[in-house]
Image (cartoon, rainbow, N blue to C red; front, side):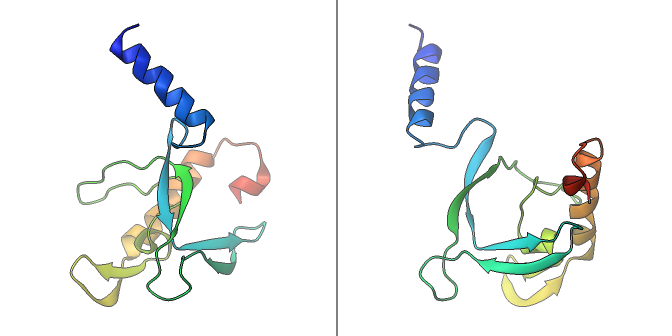
Length: 126
């Protein structure tokens, strides 16, 4: 058995035990989850932080795999992201007061509309 075949077999064993995220997904710390109505409007925000006190760490959830982002207009992640993309608000890398990120907030729904435009399920497209 080649090294590559052995590594593939080992990864599949870990997948069956749920010790790693499935191929194409990653495990990310998610602090909040937005609950959407059928028409896509946000109706609630679930606090998923562990420990019950701010700034608690988010839960490790399996989400579609992220990529390294670079450039002036990096694309958002599929179905999840940080508050700068999802809400258009967040702190800079240096900290401080929250700032508006209008271009990123606009990019998030546009990206998803483009990706999901041909999906036949009406609940996904609204």
